[in-house]
Length: 129
Image (cartoon, rainbow, N blue to C red; front, side):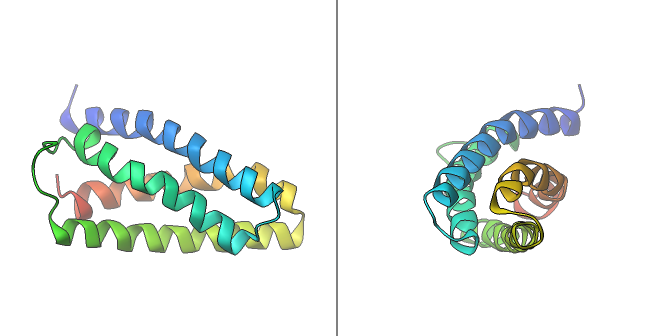
């Protein structure tokens, strides 16, 4: 298996778990009444915290004991902010046009679409593998 295909496979495996965590937190917080502009960044931040370390060590094979380069963390945060803005605006638009329940249903689909962009950005810009 090529290195890129292996990375993509690991990215997808980790991503499914992170998507489940993200969607669970988003669903619970919106159900509890937290507005989408707060619920989505909160749910994405929870998954992103776990995702940074999982992708760094499992997907893109950095040593668990190697120090975290500050510029790498900054690039990760920039990618996360951009994708979170796209995700939040999409969910807010869906909730406004349809319903909050429809936004919950759409959340995993939106995040799955953004995953392709995320993989390319993490591979080529954040972790530079």
